[in-house]
Image 1 (cartoon, rainbow, N blue to C red):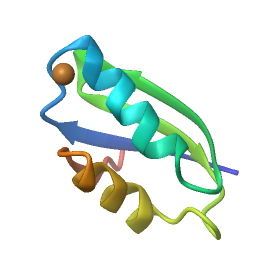
Image 2 (image 1 turned 120 degrees about the vertical axis):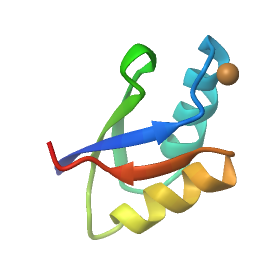
Image 3 (image 1 turned 120 degrees about the horizontal axis):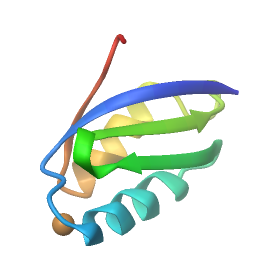
Image 4 (image 1 turned 90 degrees about the horizontal axis):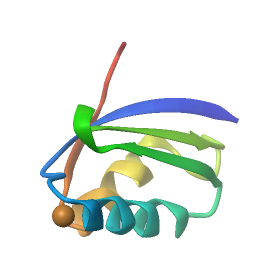
Length: 72
Ligand SMILES: [Cu+2]
């Protein structure tokens, strides 16, 4: 399991938290999703072999959010 911090644009209200949870938890290999609305970040615990970064970003884009890895 890997923990990845994503910077996500466009999260503005509490229902975004649900949308993003739904989008990411729908991916095989995603174990935990922690949306920090105030910081505009999402921490994802995932198995990179079944849920690579590109899949996370694609799922968020499908849900209407632009995301990129945060190298913090
Ligand atoms: Cu919203």
